[in-house]
Length: 326
Ligand SMILES: NC(=O)c1ccc[n+]([C@@H]2O[C@H](COP(=O)([O-])OP(=O)(O)OC[C@H]3O[C@@H](n4cnc5c(N)ncnc54)[C@H](O)[C@@H]3O)[C@@H](O)[C@H]2O)c1
Image (cartoon, rainbow, N blue to C red; front, top):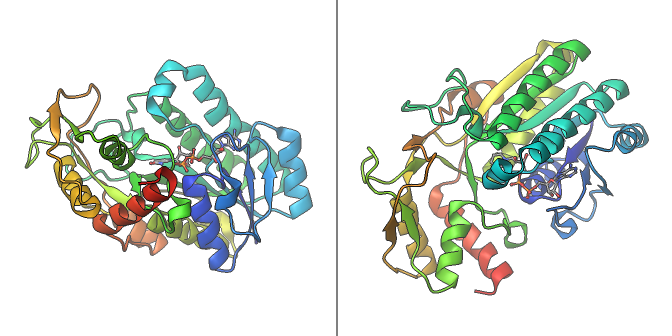
């Protein structure tokens, strides 16, 4: 097998590239470097700089490298930006996938893992979100992920491509400081950013119907997430009769809820900065609770998260200190 990892120089993609390489898989990366960092990649992983919207390049890469499987992570991922620039998100996330699937089908590639998101669910009012929970995304980013899943399944059926859509919950942490997320779009780096500026962390709403009144989320260590990709790739390549896999759609979370206040307490312990958080108004669109059922991942991928929130925060903090100088 040779796996093409699109978006492999990104935060999650670089972890996937490392986990798959360490496990003995042959991988190469395609990344337009709009957000990617080449230095994150292991030296032995070839990097092709280019876009998933470039059909000719995809065709050439598949042929020249004998690609037999694809892990597709390349996408724009900022919710607020997707609200402001929906056409760009549909063009890059859905259009990029259309181009990729056409190239993959033409090249005879038969295995594909797609980076989806818990954003496909929107804000369901359930204790645990299963893969059967109705999808109702509440922003264009989530819509492009749901449309992407539909496209992946339809193209898979039409062209005999076995597919796995992984719906990631809240990703945090780093396998090594140099692989840490450098963006400030998720709660962990947002709190670090406040502390580094000498400001108190912010809590948006403490009057939700949750045990401590703050929103509850399911945090997943990026190293566990990378191992889930490896498990998905192995699930796809392990089958001699690969059509038998068909399509799988799997939540990737820990199945445990952690409140914003609990998370900020762990961050205070790890950073040593125990500033009292300030409570501000609720943000529109925030669900009180979003926690995965992790049962299907264990059943069909044989994968379960191993790392806890403390490990996520400690590793993310080391990465933050490296990139932001403490
Ligand atoms: N980080 C999260 O919490 C999270 C949660 C759920 C889903 N996801 C999904 O996981 C994937 C990776 O996210 P990430 O956090 O690593 O983001 P990231 O921005 O660090 O990585 C995305 C990578 O894709 C590259 N890229 C973007 N558009 C491209 C294109 N058209 N062609 C080639 N390369 C392109 C970027 O340069 C970057 O290296 C995305 O699909 C994202 O939607 C992320």
